[in-house]
Amino acid sequence: MLDRDLIEQENDARDAAHQRDFEYTAERLERDGLDAERVVAEVAAFEVAVPSWALGTGGTRFGRFPGLGEPRDVFEKMEDIAVIHQLTGSTPRVSLHIPWDEPEDVAALRRHAEGLNLGFDAVNSNTFQDQAGQAHSYKFGSFSHTDAAVRRQGVAHTLHVIEVGEALGSGAITVWLADGSNFPGQMHLRRSYERVLGCLEEVYAGLPEGWQLYTEHKPYEPAFYATVVQDWGSSLMLAQALGARARCLVDLGHHLPNTNIELIVARLITAGKLGGFHFNDSKYGDDDLTTGSIKPYQLFLVFNELVDAAVEGAADFAPDYMIDQSHNLKDPLEALLQTVEALQRAYARALLVDREALGAYQEENDVLMAERALQTAYERDVSALVAEARRRQGGALDPIATFRRSGYRRAKVSAREHGAYVPPQSL
Ligand SMILES: [Mn+2]
Image 1 (tube, helix red, strand yellow):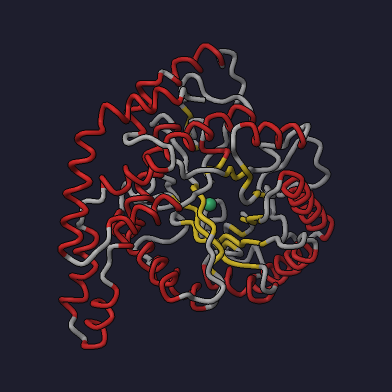
Image 2: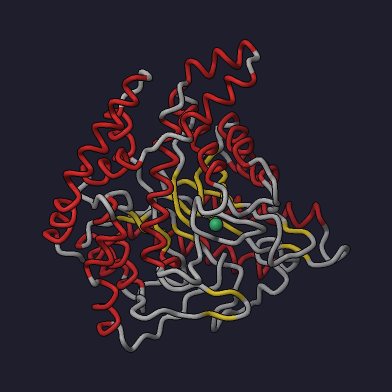
Protein backbone atom coordinates (compact mmCIF):
# COMPACT_ATOMS: atom_id res chain seq x y z
CA MET A 1 0.00 0.00 0.00
CA LEU A 2 1.01 3.64 -0.24
CA ASP A 3 2.87 5.49 2.48
CA ARG A 4 0.36 7.70 4.35
CA ASP A 5 3.00 10.41 4.67
CA LEU A 6 3.24 10.65 0.90
CA ILE A 7 -0.52 11.29 0.59
CA GLU A 8 -0.25 13.94 3.34
CA GLN A 9 2.72 15.61 1.65
CA GLU A 10 1.00 15.67 -1.71
CA ASN A 11 -2.15 17.11 -0.12
CA ASP A 12 -0.14 19.74 1.79
CA ALA A 13 1.51 20.88 -1.44
CA ARG A 14 -1.95 21.50 -2.94
CA ASP A 15 -3.63 22.75 0.20
CA ALA A 16 -3.42 26.56 -0.24
CA ALA A 17 -4.84 26.49 -3.78
CA HIS A 18 -7.46 23.93 -2.78
CA GLN A 19 -8.65 26.08 0.14
CA ARG A 20 -9.14 29.08 -2.13
CA ASP A 21 -11.01 26.97 -4.69
CA PHE A 22 -13.21 25.40 -2.03
CA GLU A 23 -14.08 28.73 -0.42
CA TYR A 24 -14.96 30.23 -3.76
CA THR A 25 -17.12 27.20 -4.70
CA ALA A 26 -18.93 27.25 -1.34
CA GLU A 27 -19.59 30.99 -1.63
CA ARG A 28 -20.82 30.66 -5.22
CA LEU A 29 -23.23 27.85 -4.19
CA GLU A 30 -24.44 29.76 -1.15
CA ARG A 31 -25.45 32.64 -3.41
CA ASP A 32 -27.86 30.17 -5.09
CA GLY A 33 -29.09 28.76 -1.80
CA LEU A 34 -27.01 25.57 -2.03
CA ASP A 35 -24.92 24.04 0.74
CA ALA A 36 -21.38 22.91 -0.16
CA GLU A 37 -20.93 21.06 3.13
CA ARG A 38 -23.95 18.86 2.46
CA VAL A 39 -22.55 17.86 -0.95
CA VAL A 40 -19.11 17.12 0.53
CA ALA A 41 -20.66 14.91 3.22
CA GLU A 42 -22.79 12.98 0.69
CA VAL A 43 -19.91 12.48 -1.76
CA ALA A 44 -17.65 11.36 1.11
CA ALA A 45 -20.26 8.71 1.99
CA PHE A 46 -20.46 7.43 -1.62
CA GLU A 47 -19.05 3.91 -2.12
CA VAL A 48 -18.46 1.86 -5.25
CA ALA A 49 -17.09 -1.67 -5.60
CA VAL A 50 -14.12 -2.46 -7.84
CA PRO A 51 -14.25 -5.66 -9.91
CA SER A 52 -11.26 -7.94 -9.64
CA TRP A 53 -11.15 -8.29 -13.43
CA ALA A 54 -10.50 -4.58 -14.01
CA LEU A 55 -7.01 -4.53 -12.45
CA GLY A 56 -5.17 -6.17 -15.34
CA THR A 57 -5.06 -4.90 -18.91
CA GLY A 58 -8.11 -6.15 -20.77
CA GLY A 59 -8.23 -7.16 -24.37
CA THR A 60 -10.43 -7.65 -27.36
CA ARG A 61 -10.86 -10.70 -29.56
CA PHE A 62 -8.03 -9.26 -31.68
CA GLY A 63 -5.40 -9.05 -29.03
CA ARG A 64 -4.20 -7.84 -25.70
CA PHE A 65 -1.31 -5.56 -24.89
CA PRO A 66 -0.46 -6.09 -21.23
CA GLY A 67 1.31 -3.50 -19.15
CA LEU A 68 4.08 -4.25 -16.70
CA GLY A 69 3.65 -4.80 -12.99
CA GLU A 70 0.07 -6.04 -13.22
CA PRO A 71 -1.39 -8.27 -10.48
CA ARG A 72 -0.86 -12.00 -10.99
CA ASP A 73 -3.54 -13.34 -8.68
CA VAL A 74 -6.52 -12.31 -6.59
CA PHE A 75 -4.30 -11.40 -3.62
CA GLU A 76 -2.36 -8.88 -5.70
CA LYS A 77 -5.56 -7.55 -7.27
CA MET A 78 -6.80 -6.84 -3.73
CA GLU A 79 -3.59 -4.90 -3.00
CA ASP A 80 -4.22 -2.67 -6.02
CA ILE A 81 -7.83 -2.08 -4.94
CA ALA A 82 -6.59 -1.14 -1.47
CA VAL A 83 -4.43 1.56 -3.11
CA ILE A 84 -7.47 2.92 -4.97
CA HIS A 85 -9.35 2.98 -1.67
CA GLN A 86 -6.45 4.79 0.05
CA LEU A 87 -6.44 7.50 -2.63
CA THR A 88 -10.20 7.94 -3.05
CA GLY A 89 -11.73 6.75 0.25
CA SER A 90 -14.61 5.35 -1.82
CA THR A 91 -13.80 1.76 -2.84
CA PRO A 92 -13.97 -0.39 0.31
CA ARG A 93 -15.18 -3.54 -1.45
CA VAL A 94 -14.15 -5.85 -4.27
CA SER A 95 -16.43 -7.78 -6.61
CA LEU A 96 -15.05 -11.24 -7.36
CA HIS A 97 -15.57 -13.48 -10.35
CA ILE A 98 -15.62 -17.23 -9.79
CA PRO A 99 -13.78 -19.27 -11.05
CA TRP A 100 -11.34 -16.57 -12.23
CA ASP A 101 -10.76 -15.57 -8.61
CA GLU A 102 -11.46 -18.96 -7.01
CA PRO A 103 -9.35 -18.94 -3.83
CA GLU A 104 -7.66 -22.16 -2.73
CA ASP A 105 -8.02 -20.97 0.83
CA VAL A 106 -11.13 -18.82 1.32
CA ALA A 107 -10.27 -17.97 4.94
CA ALA A 108 -6.80 -16.77 3.88
CA LEU A 109 -8.34 -14.49 1.24
CA ARG A 110 -10.74 -13.05 3.80
CA ARG A 111 -7.87 -12.38 6.23
CA HIS A 112 -5.89 -10.76 3.40
CA ALA A 113 -8.85 -8.48 2.65
CA GLU A 114 -9.30 -7.55 6.29
CA GLY A 115 -5.60 -6.70 6.52
CA LEU A 116 -6.10 -4.34 3.57
CA ASN A 117 -9.23 -2.82 5.11
CA LEU A 118 -11.39 -4.24 2.30
CA GLY A 119 -14.62 -6.22 2.17
CA PHE A 120 -16.46 -8.16 -0.54
CA ASP A 121 -19.29 -6.90 -2.72
CA ALA A 122 -21.51 -8.98 -5.06
CA VAL A 123 -19.89 -12.17 -6.40
CA ASN A 124 -20.22 -13.08 -10.08
CA SER A 125 -20.79 -16.54 -11.54
CA ASN A 126 -19.46 -17.77 -14.86
CA THR A 127 -21.51 -20.09 -17.02
CA PHE A 128 -20.37 -18.50 -20.27
CA GLN A 129 -17.04 -20.34 -20.53
CA ASP A 130 -16.14 -24.01 -20.21
CA GLN A 131 -13.70 -24.77 -17.40
CA ALA A 132 -11.12 -27.53 -17.41
CA GLY A 133 -12.56 -30.83 -16.24
CA GLN A 134 -16.16 -29.70 -16.59
CA ALA A 135 -18.59 -32.49 -17.54
CA HIS A 136 -20.84 -30.52 -19.90
CA SER A 137 -20.22 -27.68 -22.37
CA TYR A 138 -21.97 -24.30 -22.36
CA LYS A 139 -21.49 -23.93 -26.11
CA PHE A 140 -25.27 -23.99 -26.63
CA GLY A 141 -26.22 -22.29 -23.39
CA SER A 142 -26.23 -22.83 -19.64
CA PHE A 143 -29.47 -22.00 -17.78
CA SER A 144 -31.40 -22.09 -21.07
CA HIS A 145 -29.78 -25.28 -22.39
CA THR A 146 -32.09 -27.94 -23.77
CA ASP A 147 -30.23 -30.63 -21.76
CA ALA A 148 -31.24 -30.70 -18.09
CA ALA A 149 -27.79 -32.00 -17.13
CA VAL A 150 -26.15 -28.82 -18.45
CA ARG A 151 -28.67 -26.70 -16.57
CA ARG A 152 -28.01 -28.65 -13.35
CA GLN A 153 -24.27 -28.05 -13.78
CA GLY A 154 -24.86 -24.31 -14.23
CA VAL A 155 -27.06 -24.09 -11.15
CA ALA A 156 -24.57 -26.12 -9.09
CA HIS A 157 -21.75 -23.73 -10.12
CA THR A 158 -23.84 -20.67 -9.23
CA LEU A 159 -24.70 -22.13 -5.81
CA HIS A 160 -20.98 -22.83 -5.30
CA VAL A 161 -20.19 -19.17 -6.08
CA ILE A 162 -22.75 -18.13 -3.46
CA GLU A 163 -21.09 -20.48 -0.96
CA VAL A 164 -17.68 -18.88 -1.61
CA GLY A 165 -19.24 -15.44 -1.34
CA GLU A 166 -20.88 -16.33 1.94
CA ALA A 167 -17.57 -17.48 3.41
CA LEU A 168 -16.03 -14.16 2.34
CA GLY A 169 -18.81 -12.00 3.78
CA SER A 170 -20.44 -10.98 0.50
CA GLY A 171 -24.20 -10.40 0.40
CA ALA A 172 -25.23 -10.67 -3.25
CA ILE A 173 -24.75 -12.60 -6.47
CA THR A 174 -24.90 -11.11 -9.94
CA VAL A 175 -26.00 -13.49 -12.69
CA TRP A 176 -25.17 -12.54 -16.24
CA LEU A 177 -25.90 -15.23 -18.81
CA ALA A 178 -24.47 -15.36 -22.31
CA ASP A 179 -27.30 -17.69 -23.33
CA GLY A 180 -28.90 -17.01 -26.66
CA SER A 181 -28.76 -17.84 -30.34
CA ASN A 182 -27.00 -16.60 -33.44
CA PHE A 183 -29.65 -17.56 -35.96
CA PRO A 184 -33.44 -17.47 -36.26
CA GLY A 185 -34.89 -20.88 -35.52
CA GLN A 186 -31.89 -22.03 -33.46
CA MET A 187 -33.58 -21.54 -30.10
CA HIS A 188 -37.20 -21.61 -28.99
CA LEU A 189 -37.63 -18.03 -27.81
CA ARG A 190 -40.25 -18.66 -25.10
CA ARG A 191 -39.03 -22.01 -23.81
CA SER A 192 -35.41 -20.82 -23.48
CA TYR A 193 -36.63 -18.01 -21.20
CA GLU A 194 -38.74 -20.44 -19.16
CA ARG A 195 -35.72 -22.70 -18.65
CA VAL A 196 -33.64 -19.71 -17.45
CA LEU A 197 -36.37 -18.78 -14.98
CA GLY A 198 -36.50 -22.37 -13.74
CA CYS A 199 -32.75 -22.39 -13.03
CA LEU A 200 -32.87 -18.97 -11.38
CA GLU A 201 -35.67 -20.23 -9.12
CA GLU A 202 -33.34 -22.98 -7.90
CA VAL A 203 -30.56 -20.42 -7.29
CA TYR A 204 -32.99 -18.08 -5.53
CA ALA A 205 -34.14 -20.90 -3.27
CA GLY A 206 -30.50 -21.40 -2.28
CA LEU A 207 -29.84 -17.76 -1.34
CA PRO A 208 -28.51 -17.40 2.19
CA GLU A 209 -30.41 -15.21 4.63
CA GLY A 210 -30.14 -11.52 3.76
CA TRP A 211 -28.68 -12.15 0.29
CA GLN A 212 -29.76 -10.45 -2.92
CA LEU A 213 -29.79 -11.82 -6.46
CA TYR A 214 -29.12 -9.41 -9.32
CA THR A 215 -30.07 -10.29 -12.90
CA GLU A 216 -28.00 -8.46 -15.51
CA HIS A 217 -29.31 -8.00 -19.04
CA LYS A 218 -27.35 -7.38 -22.23
CA PRO A 219 -28.74 -6.91 -25.76
CA TYR A 220 -26.25 -8.94 -27.80
CA GLU A 221 -22.79 -10.53 -27.79
CA PRO A 222 -21.91 -13.30 -27.72
CA ALA A 223 -25.39 -14.23 -28.97
CA PHE A 224 -25.88 -12.10 -32.06
CA TYR A 225 -29.47 -12.92 -32.93
CA ALA A 226 -31.38 -13.38 -29.67
CA THR A 227 -30.08 -13.19 -26.11
CA VAL A 228 -32.41 -14.74 -23.52
CA VAL A 229 -32.02 -11.93 -20.96
CA GLN A 230 -31.52 -9.23 -23.54
CA ASP A 231 -33.29 -6.19 -22.08
CA TRP A 232 -34.53 -4.63 -18.86
CA GLY A 233 -38.02 -5.98 -19.56
CA SER A 234 -36.80 -9.58 -19.51
CA SER A 235 -34.66 -8.83 -16.45
CA LEU A 236 -37.61 -7.23 -14.62
CA MET A 237 -39.87 -10.19 -15.46
CA LEU A 238 -37.30 -12.53 -13.93
CA ALA A 239 -36.84 -10.40 -10.80
CA GLN A 240 -40.58 -10.08 -10.31
CA ALA A 241 -41.16 -13.80 -10.79
CA LEU A 242 -38.37 -14.73 -8.36
CA GLY A 243 -39.36 -12.60 -5.38
CA ALA A 244 -38.46 -9.68 -3.14
CA ARG A 245 -34.75 -10.45 -2.94
CA ALA A 246 -34.24 -10.48 -6.71
CA ARG A 247 -33.51 -7.17 -8.43
CA CYS A 248 -32.19 -5.89 -11.75
CA LEU A 249 -28.65 -4.76 -12.40
CA VAL A 250 -28.09 -2.03 -14.98
CA ASP A 251 -24.77 -2.19 -16.82
CA LEU A 252 -24.50 1.16 -18.60
CA GLY A 253 -22.86 -0.49 -21.64
CA HIS A 254 -25.58 -3.11 -22.04
CA HIS A 255 -27.99 -1.05 -24.12
CA LEU A 256 -28.42 -0.40 -27.80
CA PRO A 257 -27.24 3.02 -29.07
CA ASN A 258 -29.43 5.99 -28.07
CA THR A 259 -31.32 4.03 -25.40
CA ASN A 260 -32.59 6.33 -22.67
CA ILE A 261 -30.91 4.63 -19.72
CA GLU A 262 -32.08 7.14 -17.09
CA LEU A 263 -35.65 6.28 -18.08
CA ILE A 264 -34.94 2.58 -17.50
CA VAL A 265 -33.47 3.50 -14.11
CA ALA A 266 -36.63 5.46 -13.27
CA ARG A 267 -38.86 2.53 -14.28
CA LEU A 268 -36.90 0.05 -12.19
CA ILE A 269 -37.07 2.40 -9.20
CA THR A 270 -40.84 2.63 -9.62
CA ALA A 271 -41.02 -1.17 -9.67
CA GLY A 272 -38.85 -1.37 -6.53
CA LYS A 273 -36.46 -3.52 -8.55
CA LEU A 274 -33.31 -1.45 -9.09
CA GLY A 275 -30.58 -3.72 -7.69
CA GLY A 276 -27.50 -1.88 -8.76
CA PHE A 277 -25.14 -0.72 -11.47
CA HIS A 278 -22.15 -1.75 -13.46
CA PHE A 279 -20.60 1.59 -14.33
CA ASN A 280 -18.69 2.11 -17.57
CA ASP A 281 -19.19 4.06 -20.79
CA SER A 282 -19.63 3.23 -24.44
CA LYS A 283 -19.80 4.76 -27.87
CA TYR A 284 -21.23 1.88 -29.90
CA GLY A 285 -21.78 -1.28 -27.89
CA ASP A 286 -20.50 -2.95 -24.74
CA ASP A 287 -17.25 -1.02 -25.03
CA ASP A 288 -16.43 -1.01 -21.28
CA LEU A 289 -14.71 2.38 -21.54
CA THR A 290 -13.97 4.64 -18.58
CA THR A 291 -17.15 5.85 -16.87
CA GLY A 292 -18.07 9.35 -18.00
CA SER A 293 -15.55 9.39 -20.85
CA ILE A 294 -18.07 9.41 -23.70
CA LYS A 295 -21.46 10.50 -22.34
CA PRO A 296 -20.91 12.45 -19.12
CA TYR A 297 -24.33 14.16 -19.34
CA GLN A 298 -26.04 10.75 -19.46
CA LEU A 299 -24.11 9.71 -16.35
CA PHE A 300 -25.30 12.87 -14.61
CA LEU A 301 -28.91 12.19 -15.67
CA VAL A 302 -28.68 8.67 -14.23
CA PHE A 303 -27.42 10.09 -10.93
CA ASN A 304 -30.16 12.69 -11.07
CA GLU A 305 -32.73 9.87 -10.98
CA LEU A 306 -30.88 8.22 -8.09
CA VAL A 307 -30.72 11.40 -6.02
CA ASP A 308 -34.35 12.16 -6.82
CA ALA A 309 -35.41 8.70 -5.60
CA ALA A 310 -33.30 9.02 -2.46
CA VAL A 311 -34.71 12.46 -1.65
CA GLU A 312 -38.27 11.18 -2.08
CA GLY A 313 -37.55 8.05 -0.03
CA ALA A 314 -38.55 5.64 -2.82
CA ALA A 315 -39.51 2.19 -1.53
CA ASP A 316 -36.99 -0.67 -1.78
CA PHE A 317 -34.34 1.73 -3.01
CA ALA A 318 -30.80 0.83 -1.98
CA PRO A 319 -28.79 0.24 -5.18
CA ASP A 320 -25.40 -1.42 -5.08
CA TYR A 321 -22.73 0.43 -7.08
CA MET A 322 -20.05 -1.46 -8.97
CA ILE A 323 -17.62 -0.68 -11.77
CA ASP A 324 -17.38 -2.98 -14.80
CA GLN A 325 -14.71 -1.84 -17.24
CA SER A 326 -11.98 -3.20 -19.45
CA HIS A 327 -8.79 -1.14 -19.61
CA ASN A 328 -7.06 -1.95 -22.86
CA LEU A 329 -4.85 1.12 -23.26
CA LYS A 330 -4.68 2.94 -19.90
CA ASP A 331 -2.94 1.76 -16.76
CA PRO A 332 -5.91 -0.04 -15.14
CA LEU A 333 -5.21 1.43 -11.72
CA GLU A 334 -5.10 4.98 -13.06
CA ALA A 335 -8.26 4.39 -15.12
CA LEU A 336 -10.06 3.25 -11.98
CA LEU A 337 -8.96 6.36 -10.08
CA GLN A 338 -10.31 8.41 -12.98
CA THR A 339 -13.55 6.40 -12.84
CA VAL A 340 -14.14 7.03 -9.15
CA GLU A 341 -13.60 10.74 -9.75
CA ALA A 342 -16.10 10.73 -12.65
CA LEU A 343 -18.70 9.04 -10.42
CA GLN A 344 -18.08 11.50 -7.59
CA ARG A 345 -18.47 14.44 -9.97
CA ALA A 346 -21.71 13.13 -11.48
CA TYR A 347 -23.09 12.48 -7.99
CA ALA A 348 -22.04 15.93 -6.70
CA ARG A 349 -23.71 17.64 -9.66
CA ALA A 350 -26.90 15.63 -9.19
CA LEU A 351 -26.94 16.72 -5.55
CA LEU A 352 -26.81 20.35 -6.74
CA VAL A 353 -30.04 20.17 -8.74
CA ASP A 354 -32.58 22.60 -7.26
CA ARG A 355 -35.32 19.95 -6.96
CA GLU A 356 -37.97 22.25 -5.59
CA ALA A 357 -37.57 24.65 -8.51
CA LEU A 358 -37.37 21.78 -11.01
CA GLY A 359 -40.61 20.29 -9.65
CA ALA A 360 -42.38 23.64 -9.95
CA TYR A 361 -41.19 24.13 -13.54
CA GLN A 362 -42.40 20.63 -14.42
CA GLU A 363 -45.84 21.34 -12.92
CA GLU A 364 -46.07 24.60 -14.89
CA ASN A 365 -44.82 22.95 -18.10
CA ASP A 366 -42.03 25.51 -18.26
CA VAL A 367 -39.86 23.42 -20.55
CA LEU A 368 -36.93 25.78 -20.86
CA MET A 369 -36.56 26.47 -17.15
CA ALA A 370 -36.96 22.79 -16.23
CA GLU A 371 -34.23 21.85 -18.67
CA ARG A 372 -32.06 24.71 -17.40
CA ALA A 373 -32.43 23.52 -13.80
CA LEU A 374 -30.61 20.34 -14.83
CA GLN A 375 -28.08 22.05 -17.09
CA THR A 376 -27.16 24.58 -14.42
CA ALA A 377 -26.33 21.79 -11.97
CA TYR A 378 -24.45 19.83 -14.63
CA GLU A 379 -22.30 22.80 -15.56
CA ARG A 380 -21.19 23.63 -12.01
CA ASP A 381 -17.54 23.18 -11.16
CA VAL A 382 -17.52 20.54 -8.44
CA SER A 383 -13.76 19.83 -8.50
CA ALA A 384 -13.07 21.36 -5.08
CA LEU A 385 -16.10 19.63 -3.52
CA VAL A 386 -15.08 16.12 -4.59
CA ALA A 387 -11.43 16.79 -3.70
CA GLU A 388 -12.50 17.90 -0.23
CA ALA A 389 -14.72 14.81 0.13
CA ARG A 390 -11.78 12.56 -0.73
CA ARG A 391 -9.48 14.29 1.71
CA ARG A 392 -12.00 13.95 4.55
CA GLN A 393 -12.03 10.22 3.81
CA GLY A 394 -8.25 10.16 4.19
CA GLY A 395 -7.70 10.21 0.42
CA ALA A 396 -5.82 12.43 -1.97
CA LEU A 397 -6.78 15.85 -3.32
CA ASP A 398 -5.35 14.68 -6.66
CA PRO A 399 -5.38 10.85 -6.73
CA ILE A 400 -3.74 10.33 -10.12
CA ALA A 401 -0.89 12.80 -9.52
CA THR A 402 -0.32 11.27 -6.08
CA PHE A 403 -0.36 7.75 -7.54
CA ARG A 404 2.20 8.70 -10.18
CA ARG A 405 4.39 10.38 -7.57
CA SER A 406 4.26 7.26 -5.38
CA GLY A 407 6.14 5.07 -7.87
CA TYR A 408 3.74 2.23 -6.98
CA ARG A 409 3.58 0.81 -10.49
CA ARG A 410 7.36 0.96 -10.96
CA ALA A 411 7.82 -0.91 -7.70
CA LYS A 412 5.38 -3.58 -8.84
CA VAL A 413 7.14 -4.05 -12.17
CA SER A 414 10.06 -5.67 -10.37
CA ALA A 415 8.01 -7.26 -7.58
CA ARG A 416 5.60 -8.90 -10.05
CA GLU A 417 8.22 -9.56 -12.71
CA HIS A 418 7.28 -13.17 -13.33
CA GLY A 419 3.67 -12.54 -14.20
CA ALA A 420 1.38 -15.37 -15.19
CA TYR A 421 -1.90 -13.55 -14.87
CA VAL A 422 -4.04 -13.50 -18.00
CA PRO A 423 -7.11 -11.34 -17.48
CA PRO A 424 -10.31 -12.09 -19.33
CA GLN A 425 -11.75 -10.29 -22.30
CA SER A 426 -14.37 -7.71 -21.49
CA LEU A 427 -17.81 -8.78 -20.28
MN1 LIG B 1 -21.54 -5.95 -16.37
